[in-house]
Image 1: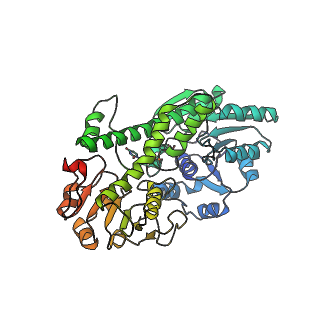
Image 2: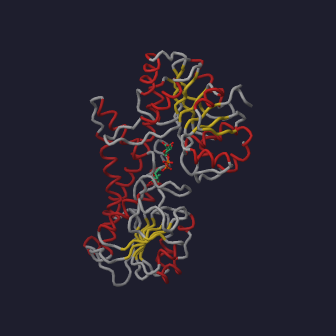
Image 3: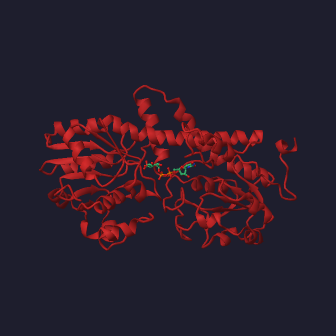
Amino acid sequence: MPQTQRPVGVIGVGYVGLVTAVCIAHLGHHVVCLDVDEAKIEALRAGKVPIYEPGLDALMAGARDRLSFTTSYDELCERSRVLFIAVDTPPSPSGDADLSRVERVVRDVSARDGERLLVMKSTVPVGTGDRVLAELESAGAAAIGYVSNPEFLREGAAVDDVLHPDRIVIGAYRERDGDEIQRLFAGIETTVVRTTVPTAEMIKYASNAFLATKISFINEIANVCEVVGADVRAVADGMGLDHRIGPYFLQAGIGYGGSCFPKDVQALKQLAGNSGYHFQLLNAVIEVNHLQKRRVVGKLQERLGGRLRGKHVALLGLTFKPNTDDLREAASIVLASRLRAEGARVTAYDPMVAPGSRADLFPGVEIATGALEALDGADAAILVTEWPELVALDWTVVRERMKGRHVIDGRNVLDAALVTAAGLSYDGIGTVDRTVAAGEPVTSSEAR
Ligand code: UGA
Protein backbone atom coordinates (compact mmCIF):
# COMPACT_ATOMS: atom_id res chain seq x y z
CA MET A 1 0.00 0.00 0.00
CA PRO A 2 1.06 3.61 -0.52
CA GLN A 3 4.18 4.62 1.32
CA THR A 4 4.36 8.15 -0.03
CA GLN A 5 1.87 10.72 1.21
CA ARG A 6 2.21 13.14 -1.69
CA PRO A 7 1.69 11.86 -5.22
CA VAL A 8 4.74 10.68 -7.10
CA GLY A 9 5.54 12.78 -10.17
CA VAL A 10 6.57 11.27 -13.50
CA ILE A 11 8.00 13.61 -16.12
CA GLY A 12 7.70 12.35 -19.71
CA VAL A 13 4.96 9.91 -20.68
CA GLY A 14 6.66 7.96 -23.45
CA TYR A 15 7.00 4.18 -23.20
CA VAL A 16 9.12 4.20 -20.07
CA GLY A 17 7.38 7.08 -18.30
CA LEU A 18 3.83 5.99 -18.92
CA VAL A 19 4.41 2.35 -18.03
CA THR A 20 6.33 3.40 -14.90
CA ALA A 21 3.55 5.80 -13.88
CA VAL A 22 0.78 3.28 -14.40
CA CYS A 23 2.68 0.53 -12.57
CA ILE A 24 3.44 2.82 -9.60
CA ALA A 25 -0.27 3.73 -9.49
CA HIS A 26 -1.10 0.02 -9.69
CA LEU A 27 1.07 -0.49 -6.59
CA GLY A 28 -1.30 1.87 -4.76
CA HIS A 29 0.43 5.25 -5.01
CA HIS A 30 -1.04 8.43 -6.43
CA VAL A 31 0.85 9.64 -9.50
CA VAL A 32 0.92 12.94 -11.39
CA CYS A 33 2.26 12.65 -14.93
CA LEU A 34 3.66 15.61 -16.81
CA ASP A 35 4.42 15.92 -20.49
CA VAL A 36 5.03 18.95 -22.67
CA ASP A 37 2.90 17.37 -25.42
CA GLU A 38 -0.59 18.74 -24.77
CA ALA A 39 -2.30 16.37 -27.20
CA LYS A 40 -0.82 13.38 -25.37
CA ILE A 41 -1.93 14.72 -21.99
CA GLU A 42 -5.43 15.42 -23.33
CA ALA A 43 -5.67 11.87 -24.66
CA LEU A 44 -4.51 10.42 -21.34
CA ARG A 45 -7.02 12.55 -19.43
CA ALA A 46 -9.70 11.07 -21.67
CA GLY A 47 -8.48 7.59 -20.68
CA LYS A 48 -6.76 6.87 -24.01
CA VAL A 49 -3.36 5.18 -24.03
CA PRO A 50 -1.32 6.89 -26.77
CA ILE A 51 1.02 3.92 -27.31
CA TYR A 52 0.39 0.27 -28.08
CA GLU A 53 1.61 -1.80 -25.16
CA PRO A 54 -0.16 -5.04 -24.24
CA GLY A 55 -1.92 -4.88 -20.87
CA LEU A 56 -1.32 -1.18 -20.34
CA ASP A 57 -4.91 0.04 -20.98
CA ALA A 58 -6.37 -2.44 -18.52
CA LEU A 59 -3.84 -1.56 -15.83
CA MET A 60 -4.39 2.14 -16.44
CA ALA A 61 -8.18 1.75 -16.26
CA GLY A 62 -7.80 -0.08 -12.95
CA ALA A 63 -5.67 2.71 -11.46
CA ARG A 64 -7.49 5.69 -12.99
CA ASP A 65 -8.47 7.30 -9.72
CA ARG A 66 -4.80 7.43 -8.67
CA LEU A 67 -3.50 8.91 -11.93
CA SER A 68 -3.64 12.51 -13.05
CA PHE A 69 -2.07 14.30 -15.98
CA THR A 70 -0.75 17.81 -16.49
CA THR A 71 1.43 19.99 -18.68
CA SER A 72 2.16 22.40 -15.83
CA TYR A 73 5.41 22.26 -13.84
CA ASP A 74 3.80 24.56 -11.27
CA GLU A 75 1.08 22.00 -10.63
CA LEU A 76 3.52 19.08 -10.63
CA CYS A 77 5.94 20.73 -8.20
CA GLU A 78 3.11 21.94 -6.01
CA ARG A 79 1.82 18.40 -5.61
CA SER A 80 4.88 16.16 -5.80
CA ARG A 81 8.22 15.89 -4.06
CA VAL A 82 9.54 12.67 -5.63
CA LEU A 83 9.93 13.21 -9.37
CA PHE A 84 10.81 10.43 -11.81
CA ILE A 85 12.47 11.71 -14.99
CA ALA A 86 11.61 9.60 -18.04
CA VAL A 87 12.25 11.89 -20.99
CA ASP A 88 14.07 10.54 -24.02
CA THR A 89 17.79 10.81 -24.56
CA PRO A 90 18.15 10.35 -28.33
CA PRO A 91 21.55 10.11 -30.02
CA SER A 92 23.16 13.42 -30.96
CA PRO A 93 25.07 13.77 -34.26
CA SER A 94 28.31 12.85 -32.43
CA GLY A 95 26.81 9.61 -31.11
CA ASP A 96 26.72 10.91 -27.53
CA ALA A 97 23.35 10.83 -25.80
CA ASP A 98 21.50 14.12 -26.25
CA LEU A 99 20.71 15.24 -22.72
CA SER A 100 18.97 18.49 -23.62
CA ARG A 101 15.53 17.24 -22.50
CA VAL A 102 16.91 15.98 -19.20
CA GLU A 103 18.69 19.31 -18.64
CA ARG A 104 15.48 21.20 -19.40
CA VAL A 105 13.58 19.15 -16.83
CA VAL A 106 16.23 19.76 -14.17
CA ARG A 107 16.10 23.50 -14.91
CA ASP A 108 12.30 23.59 -14.79
CA VAL A 109 12.18 21.70 -11.50
CA SER A 110 15.02 23.55 -9.79
CA ALA A 111 13.45 26.90 -10.73
CA ARG A 112 10.61 26.07 -8.35
CA ASP A 113 11.04 26.25 -4.61
CA GLY A 114 10.80 23.22 -2.40
CA GLU A 115 12.67 20.14 -1.32
CA ARG A 116 12.68 17.40 -3.99
CA LEU A 117 14.04 14.04 -4.94
CA LEU A 118 14.84 13.50 -8.62
CA VAL A 119 14.80 9.89 -9.76
CA MET A 120 16.46 9.30 -13.12
CA LYS A 121 14.71 6.62 -15.21
CA SER A 122 16.00 7.90 -18.56
CA THR A 123 19.13 6.18 -19.82
CA VAL A 124 21.87 8.74 -19.23
CA PRO A 125 25.64 8.51 -19.63
CA VAL A 126 27.70 7.57 -16.60
CA GLY A 127 28.56 10.79 -14.80
CA THR A 128 25.23 12.50 -15.47
CA GLY A 129 24.11 12.23 -11.85
CA ASP A 130 27.37 13.76 -10.61
CA ARG A 131 27.03 16.58 -13.12
CA VAL A 132 23.38 17.31 -12.37
CA LEU A 133 24.07 17.38 -8.65
CA ALA A 134 27.06 19.71 -9.09
CA GLU A 135 24.99 22.04 -11.27
CA LEU A 136 22.13 22.06 -8.79
CA GLU A 137 24.53 22.85 -5.97
CA SER A 138 26.21 25.66 -7.87
CA ALA A 139 22.77 27.10 -8.70
CA GLY A 140 21.95 27.09 -5.01
CA ALA A 141 19.28 24.37 -5.28
CA ALA A 142 20.83 22.16 -2.62
CA ALA A 143 17.43 20.89 -1.45
CA ILE A 144 17.23 18.53 -4.39
CA GLY A 145 18.30 14.91 -3.96
CA TYR A 146 19.15 12.55 -6.82
CA VAL A 147 18.70 8.82 -7.36
CA SER A 148 19.54 6.72 -10.43
CA ASN A 149 16.90 4.05 -10.99
CA PRO A 150 17.46 2.72 -14.52
CA GLU A 151 14.69 0.92 -16.36
CA PHE A 152 15.06 -2.53 -17.91
CA LEU A 153 11.60 -2.96 -19.45
CA ARG A 154 11.20 -4.30 -22.96
CA GLU A 155 8.60 -2.81 -25.26
CA GLY A 156 5.82 -5.29 -25.86
CA ALA A 157 6.37 -6.86 -22.43
CA ALA A 158 6.75 -3.62 -20.50
CA VAL A 159 4.05 -4.06 -17.85
CA ASP A 160 5.24 -7.51 -16.90
CA ASP A 161 8.87 -6.37 -16.90
CA VAL A 162 8.09 -3.53 -14.47
CA LEU A 163 5.91 -5.54 -12.13
CA HIS A 164 8.09 -8.68 -12.25
CA PRO A 165 11.61 -7.43 -12.94
CA ASP A 166 14.80 -9.46 -12.68
CA ARG A 167 16.14 -6.71 -10.43
CA ILE A 168 15.59 -3.13 -9.32
CA VAL A 169 18.73 -1.00 -9.38
CA ILE A 170 18.91 2.00 -7.08
CA GLY A 171 21.97 4.24 -7.02
CA ALA A 172 21.82 7.04 -4.47
CA TYR A 173 24.04 9.72 -2.96
CA ARG A 174 22.15 9.65 0.33
CA GLU A 175 21.09 6.40 1.97
CA ARG A 176 17.66 7.76 2.92
CA ASP A 177 16.86 8.70 -0.72
CA GLY A 178 17.62 5.16 -1.82
CA ASP A 179 15.51 3.81 1.06
CA GLU A 180 12.58 5.98 -0.01
CA ILE A 181 12.63 4.72 -3.58
CA GLN A 182 13.05 1.13 -2.41
CA ARG A 183 9.95 1.57 -0.22
CA LEU A 184 8.01 2.93 -3.18
CA PHE A 185 8.54 -0.39 -5.00
CA ALA A 186 7.79 -2.46 -1.90
CA GLY A 187 4.97 -4.34 -3.68
CA ILE A 188 7.41 -5.81 -6.20
CA GLU A 189 9.25 -8.95 -5.24
CA THR A 190 12.74 -9.01 -6.67
CA THR A 191 16.39 -8.45 -5.87
CA VAL A 192 17.14 -4.81 -5.13
CA VAL A 193 20.65 -3.69 -6.04
CA ARG A 194 21.70 -0.72 -3.90
CA THR A 195 24.76 1.04 -5.20
CA THR A 196 26.30 4.36 -6.15
CA VAL A 197 24.85 6.60 -8.86
CA PRO A 198 27.66 6.07 -11.43
CA THR A 199 27.50 2.30 -10.92
CA ALA A 200 23.73 2.26 -11.41
CA GLU A 201 24.15 4.32 -14.59
CA MET A 202 26.77 1.88 -15.84
CA ILE A 203 24.66 -1.21 -15.03
CA LYS A 204 22.08 0.07 -17.51
CA TYR A 205 24.54 0.70 -20.36
CA ALA A 206 26.51 -2.47 -19.73
CA SER A 207 23.31 -4.57 -19.71
CA ASN A 208 22.06 -3.22 -23.03
CA ALA A 209 25.50 -3.40 -24.61
CA PHE A 210 25.93 -6.99 -23.46
CA LEU A 211 22.54 -8.02 -24.85
CA ALA A 212 23.35 -6.34 -28.16
CA THR A 213 26.71 -8.13 -28.17
CA LYS A 214 24.93 -11.45 -27.66
CA ILE A 215 22.74 -10.73 -30.70
CA SER A 216 25.63 -9.69 -32.94
CA PHE A 217 27.60 -12.72 -31.75
CA ILE A 218 24.86 -15.18 -32.64
CA ASN A 219 24.34 -13.38 -35.95
CA GLU A 220 27.99 -13.89 -36.83
CA ILE A 221 27.74 -17.53 -35.79
CA ALA A 222 24.71 -17.76 -38.11
CA ASN A 223 26.72 -16.32 -40.97
CA VAL A 224 29.46 -18.87 -40.40
CA CYS A 225 26.84 -21.62 -40.11
CA GLU A 226 25.69 -20.76 -43.63
CA VAL A 227 29.19 -21.35 -44.95
CA VAL A 228 29.89 -24.58 -43.07
CA GLY A 229 26.42 -26.14 -43.26
CA ALA A 230 25.50 -25.95 -39.57
CA ASP A 231 22.14 -24.77 -38.22
CA VAL A 232 22.33 -21.77 -35.91
CA ARG A 233 19.06 -22.60 -34.14
CA ALA A 234 20.41 -25.93 -32.97
CA VAL A 235 23.75 -24.30 -32.18
CA ALA A 236 22.00 -21.66 -30.03
CA ASP A 237 19.95 -24.36 -28.27
CA GLY A 238 23.09 -26.32 -27.55
CA MET A 239 24.97 -23.28 -26.32
CA GLY A 240 22.06 -22.05 -24.23
CA LEU A 241 21.99 -25.20 -22.12
CA ASP A 242 25.23 -24.07 -20.53
CA HIS A 243 23.95 -22.06 -17.58
CA ARG A 244 26.88 -19.67 -17.92
CA ILE A 245 25.58 -18.73 -21.38
CA GLY A 246 21.81 -19.10 -20.95
CA PRO A 247 19.20 -19.60 -23.69
CA TYR A 248 18.09 -15.97 -24.06
CA PHE A 249 18.96 -13.44 -26.72
CA LEU A 250 20.48 -16.00 -29.01
CA GLN A 251 17.90 -15.65 -31.75
CA ALA A 252 19.77 -14.98 -34.98
CA GLY A 253 18.11 -12.71 -37.51
CA ILE A 254 18.43 -9.46 -39.39
CA GLY A 255 19.83 -7.58 -36.42
CA TYR A 256 18.61 -5.57 -33.48
CA GLY A 257 16.67 -2.33 -33.75
CA GLY A 258 14.51 -0.16 -31.54
CA SER A 259 14.98 2.97 -29.56
CA CYS A 260 17.46 1.49 -27.08
CA PHE A 261 20.12 -0.94 -28.29
CA PRO A 262 21.39 1.05 -31.31
CA LYS A 263 21.49 4.29 -29.32
CA ASP A 264 22.84 2.87 -26.07
CA VAL A 265 25.61 0.80 -27.65
CA GLN A 266 26.70 3.86 -29.61
CA ALA A 267 26.51 6.04 -26.50
CA LEU A 268 28.60 3.62 -24.41
CA LYS A 269 31.21 3.43 -27.15
CA GLN A 270 31.21 7.21 -27.29
CA LEU A 271 31.37 7.55 -23.52
CA ALA A 272 34.40 5.26 -23.39
CA GLY A 273 36.00 7.12 -26.31
CA ASN A 274 35.45 10.49 -24.65
CA SER A 275 37.33 9.16 -21.64
CA GLY A 276 40.21 7.97 -23.83
CA TYR A 277 39.24 4.29 -23.99
CA HIS A 278 38.72 2.65 -27.37
CA PHE A 279 35.92 0.11 -26.87
CA GLN A 280 36.86 -2.17 -29.76
CA LEU A 281 34.28 -4.86 -29.14
CA LEU A 282 31.37 -2.43 -29.47
CA ASN A 283 32.64 -1.25 -32.86
CA ALA A 284 32.27 -4.81 -34.10
CA VAL A 285 28.85 -5.23 -32.48
CA ILE A 286 27.59 -2.13 -34.29
CA GLU A 287 29.13 -3.07 -37.63
CA VAL A 288 27.83 -6.63 -37.56
CA ASN A 289 24.36 -5.25 -36.87
CA HIS A 290 24.55 -2.94 -39.89
CA LEU A 291 25.85 -5.66 -42.17
CA GLN A 292 23.24 -8.17 -41.08
CA LYS A 293 20.48 -6.15 -42.77
CA ARG A 294 22.50 -5.73 -45.94
CA ARG A 295 23.21 -9.47 -46.11
CA VAL A 296 19.50 -10.11 -46.58
CA VAL A 297 19.50 -7.89 -49.66
CA GLY A 298 22.54 -9.79 -50.94
CA LYS A 299 20.77 -13.08 -50.38
CA LEU A 300 17.77 -11.83 -52.28
CA GLN A 301 19.96 -10.73 -55.17
CA GLU A 302 21.45 -14.21 -55.28
CA ARG A 303 18.03 -15.82 -55.32
CA LEU A 304 16.58 -13.48 -57.93
CA GLY A 305 19.46 -13.85 -60.34
CA GLY A 306 21.52 -10.80 -59.45
CA ARG A 307 19.45 -7.73 -60.12
CA LEU A 308 16.56 -6.40 -58.11
CA ARG A 309 15.54 -3.70 -60.58
CA GLY A 310 11.89 -4.19 -61.47
CA LYS A 311 11.49 -7.07 -58.98
CA HIS A 312 8.67 -6.94 -56.50
CA VAL A 313 9.61 -7.60 -52.88
CA ALA A 314 7.05 -7.80 -50.05
CA LEU A 315 8.15 -6.91 -46.53
CA LEU A 316 6.17 -8.73 -43.84
CA GLY A 317 6.30 -6.65 -40.65
CA LEU A 318 7.79 -3.20 -40.22
CA THR A 319 7.97 -2.48 -36.48
CA PHE A 320 11.32 -3.19 -34.81
CA LYS A 321 9.78 -6.19 -33.07
CA PRO A 322 6.27 -7.60 -32.57
CA ASN A 323 3.73 -6.31 -30.04
CA THR A 324 4.79 -2.71 -30.40
CA ASP A 325 3.95 0.14 -32.75
CA ASP A 326 7.51 1.43 -32.48
CA LEU A 327 9.38 1.91 -35.75
CA ARG A 328 12.48 3.57 -34.32
CA GLU A 329 15.67 2.08 -35.82
CA ALA A 330 13.61 -0.78 -37.27
CA ALA A 331 15.50 -3.08 -39.67
CA SER A 332 12.61 -2.59 -42.11
CA ILE A 333 13.62 1.05 -42.73
CA VAL A 334 17.10 0.08 -43.90
CA LEU A 335 15.81 -2.90 -45.89
CA ALA A 336 13.10 -0.89 -47.66
CA SER A 337 15.51 1.88 -48.49
CA ARG A 338 18.17 -0.53 -49.85
CA LEU A 339 15.60 -2.40 -51.92
CA ARG A 340 14.22 0.83 -53.36
CA ALA A 341 17.76 1.98 -54.12
CA GLU A 342 18.29 -1.28 -56.05
CA GLY A 343 15.22 -0.41 -58.12
CA ALA A 344 12.82 -2.94 -56.59
CA ARG A 345 9.11 -2.33 -56.12
CA VAL A 346 8.47 -2.69 -52.39
CA THR A 347 5.14 -3.50 -50.80
CA ALA A 348 4.73 -4.03 -47.08
CA TYR A 349 2.30 -4.97 -44.36
CA ASP A 350 2.38 -4.41 -40.63
CA PRO A 351 -0.58 -4.63 -38.26
CA MET A 352 0.50 -1.33 -36.67
CA VAL A 353 1.23 0.68 -39.82
CA ALA A 354 -1.73 2.01 -41.80
CA PRO A 355 -1.68 2.19 -45.60
CA GLY A 356 -0.61 5.63 -46.77
CA SER A 357 1.11 6.45 -43.48
CA ARG A 358 4.79 6.82 -42.61
CA ALA A 359 5.96 7.97 -46.02
CA ASP A 360 8.63 9.80 -44.03
CA LEU A 361 10.24 6.46 -43.08
CA PHE A 362 9.23 4.38 -46.08
CA PRO A 363 9.29 6.65 -49.15
CA GLY A 364 8.05 4.85 -52.26
CA VAL A 365 6.90 1.79 -50.30
CA GLU A 366 3.30 0.70 -50.84
CA ILE A 367 1.82 -0.22 -47.47
CA ALA A 368 -1.00 -2.72 -47.86
CA THR A 369 -4.08 -3.45 -45.76
CA GLY A 370 -3.14 -7.08 -45.20
CA ALA A 371 -0.27 -9.52 -45.61
CA LEU A 372 -1.82 -11.22 -48.63
CA GLU A 373 -2.44 -7.87 -50.33
CA ALA A 374 1.24 -7.01 -49.83
CA LEU A 375 2.22 -10.40 -51.26
CA ASP A 376 0.03 -10.13 -54.36
CA GLY A 377 2.26 -10.69 -57.38
CA ALA A 378 5.50 -10.48 -55.36
CA ASP A 379 8.68 -12.14 -56.59
CA ALA A 380 9.96 -12.55 -53.05
CA ALA A 381 8.88 -12.00 -49.47
CA ILE A 382 10.97 -11.17 -46.41
CA LEU A 383 9.64 -11.82 -42.93
CA VAL A 384 11.02 -8.79 -41.11
CA THR A 385 9.02 -8.78 -37.85
CA GLU A 386 7.73 -11.95 -36.23
CA TRP A 387 4.15 -10.81 -35.61
CA PRO A 388 2.13 -13.91 -34.70
CA GLU A 389 -0.31 -13.37 -37.59
CA LEU A 390 2.60 -13.36 -40.04
CA VAL A 391 4.21 -16.46 -38.57
CA ALA A 392 0.83 -18.20 -38.87
CA LEU A 393 0.27 -17.34 -42.54
CA ASP A 394 -1.13 -20.11 -44.72
CA TRP A 395 1.77 -20.61 -47.11
CA THR A 396 -0.36 -22.45 -49.66
CA VAL A 397 -2.48 -19.33 -49.98
CA VAL A 398 0.68 -17.19 -50.02
CA ARG A 399 2.04 -19.30 -52.88
CA GLU A 400 -1.15 -18.66 -54.87
CA ARG A 401 -0.90 -14.91 -54.33
CA MET A 402 2.83 -14.54 -55.10
CA LYS A 403 4.29 -14.55 -58.58
CA GLY A 404 7.70 -15.81 -57.48
CA ARG A 405 8.64 -18.33 -54.82
CA HIS A 406 11.22 -16.85 -52.56
CA VAL A 407 10.64 -16.50 -48.86
CA ILE A 408 13.39 -15.17 -46.61
CA ASP A 409 12.75 -15.68 -42.93
CA GLY A 410 14.58 -12.76 -41.34
CA ARG A 411 13.78 -13.97 -37.82
CA ASN A 412 14.18 -17.76 -38.11
CA VAL A 413 10.67 -18.34 -36.82
CA LEU A 414 8.83 -19.92 -39.74
CA ASP A 415 8.25 -23.62 -40.12
CA ALA A 416 10.47 -24.27 -43.13
CA ALA A 417 8.69 -27.57 -43.86
CA LEU A 418 5.33 -25.80 -44.21
CA VAL A 419 6.78 -23.10 -46.43
CA THR A 420 8.49 -25.55 -48.75
CA ALA A 421 5.52 -27.94 -48.78
CA ALA A 422 3.53 -25.05 -50.25
CA GLY A 423 5.97 -24.94 -53.18
CA LEU A 424 7.95 -21.95 -51.96
CA SER A 425 11.67 -21.74 -51.37
CA TYR A 426 12.88 -21.02 -47.85
CA ASP A 427 15.93 -19.20 -46.58
CA GLY A 428 16.55 -18.59 -42.91
CA ILE A 429 19.49 -16.81 -41.33
CA GLY A 430 22.16 -19.42 -40.67
CA THR A 431 19.80 -22.36 -41.04
CA VAL A 432 20.20 -25.56 -43.07
CA ASP A 433 16.63 -25.47 -44.36
CA ARG A 434 17.51 -23.65 -47.52
CA THR A 435 15.58 -25.17 -50.38
CA VAL A 436 15.97 -24.38 -54.03
CA ALA A 437 12.76 -24.05 -55.99
CA ALA A 438 12.71 -25.24 -59.60
CA GLY A 439 14.38 -22.82 -61.97
CA GLU A 440 16.31 -20.93 -59.27
CA PRO A 441 19.96 -20.10 -59.85
CA VAL A 442 22.30 -22.33 -57.85
CA THR A 443 25.07 -20.42 -56.08
CA SER A 444 28.67 -21.54 -56.34
CA SER A 445 28.79 -22.68 -52.70
CA GLU A 446 25.78 -24.93 -53.29
CA ALA A 447 27.23 -26.33 -56.51
CA ARG A 448 30.32 -27.49 -54.68
C1 UGA B 1 15.76 -3.39 -24.68
C2 UGA B 1 16.18 -4.25 -23.47
O1 UGA B 1 15.85 -5.62 -23.72
C3 UGA B 1 15.46 -3.79 -22.19
O2 UGA B 1 15.92 -4.52 -21.09
C4 UGA B 1 15.76 -2.30 -21.99
O3 UGA B 1 15.07 -1.78 -20.86
C5 UGA B 1 15.33 -1.50 -23.21
O4 UGA B 1 16.03 -2.01 -24.37
C6 UGA B 1 15.70 -0.07 -22.95
O5 UGA B 1 16.89 0.23 -22.76
O6 UGA B 1 14.79 0.77 -22.79
P1 UGA B 1 13.62 -3.31 -26.30
O7 UGA B 1 14.42 -2.33 -27.11
O8 UGA B 1 12.21 -2.97 -25.97
O9 UGA B 1 14.36 -3.58 -24.89
O10 UGA B 1 13.57 -4.66 -27.13
P2 UGA B 1 14.22 -6.12 -27.06
O11 UGA B 1 13.14 -7.10 -26.83
O12 UGA B 1 15.37 -6.17 -26.15
O13 UGA B 1 14.70 -6.29 -28.57
C7 UGA B 1 15.65 -5.40 -29.15
C8 UGA B 1 15.99 -5.84 -30.56
O14 UGA B 1 16.80 -7.01 -30.53
C9 UGA B 1 14.78 -6.18 -31.43
O15 UGA B 1 14.99 -5.64 -32.72
C10 UGA B 1 14.79 -7.70 -31.49
O16 UGA B 1 14.21 -8.21 -32.65
C11 UGA B 1 16.28 -7.98 -31.42
N1 UGA B 1 16.62 -9.31 -30.89
C12 UGA B 1 16.33 -9.62 -29.61
C13 UGA B 1 17.26 -10.23 -31.70
O17 UGA B 1 17.56 -9.97 -32.89
N2 UGA B 1 17.60 -11.45 -31.18
C14 UGA B 1 17.31 -11.78 -29.91
O18 UGA B 1 17.68 -12.93 -29.50
C15 UGA B 1 16.67 -10.86 -29.10
